[in-house]
Amino acid sequence: MAVIHHTALKPTKLELLTAWLPSRPWYSGGTGEPELTKAGGFRLDDPEGEVGIEFMVVTDTSGTQPVAYLVPLTYRGAPLDEAEHALVGTMEHGVLGRRWAYDGCHDPVLVAQLLALIEGRAQAQDQNTSDTPDREVTRSYTGDTLVPTDFTATDDQAGTELRAPYGTTLRLHRALRPAPDTTPVLPPETTGHVTGSWHLPDGTRTRGLFAVLHPGR
Image (cartoon, rainbow, N blue to C red; front, side, top):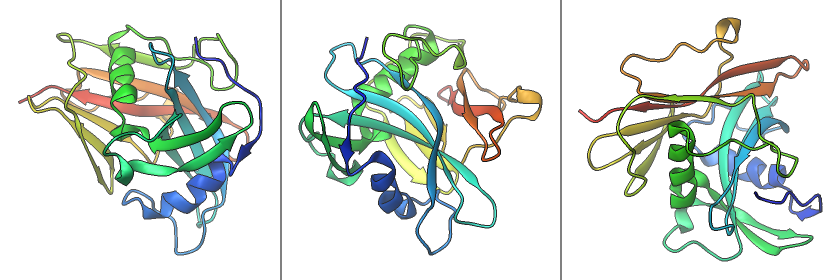
């Protein structure tokens, strides 16, 4: 299990995301700087113990209505080859030293573990406490074994699409929507999904779809 270090980060994750989020096509804020707060999320373990994997939910209150964004991040002790386009920024960690933070949709370690979570081979972990499963994260899958290689990530106004050469598509919802009655409705032809929870600005706990998987056609 990954160890959560409660230590200082310079700059903080929210400071990195404040600069990075407006560059994303799925960001719906205005021309001003985002006003971000941490609203929830979870972690996954890297089987090799080298890469930190976090699915962070942040709420931006800079616009007329607050918007919650899903931001999958990976933290590495050295740059990821050929991933300069996915670099969110670098941080100085009080225990681990310099860390390179990436948009995890472009990191093969995060993609592999997200697929493992959908299949039920990996367990979501609490965002802030070591060795503690996150029971609020739910998943489902019906299908053959997923191949965790060669997914290509593309951002659009709706979110991020990860597409495999054989056609399987994993769609990550970036601007999150609370599910009616806390029961997300899955899109047609969905073979797998991940649902998570986060806090609304008024403190209410809600949940919604984080990711959906569609089979190849």
